[in-house]
Image 1: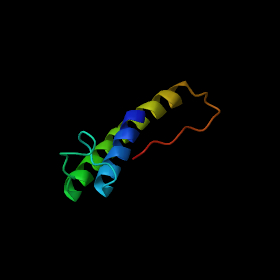
Image 2: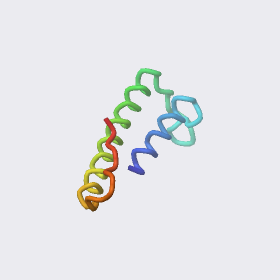
Image 3: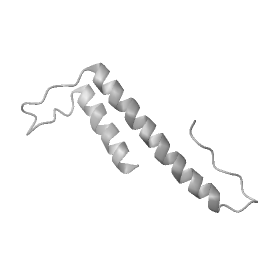
Image 4: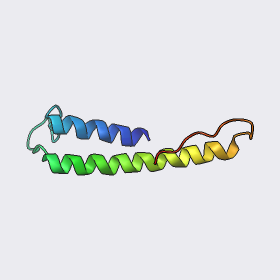
Length: 73
């Protein structure tokens, strides 16, 4: 999950032009808005899947008297 969040942060910074990438910001091109949006959507889906796996394992071990944690739909 931390890797996905870090990748999302990097993607956002690149889209805003704050992180140029490459060696010392030289030679890297800024990704288009479509590329950034596509990558961010992929990371969001991956993050949601990882979160749901975590919640499934958590709910599986949870005692019956407690409310179950919600999944991301």
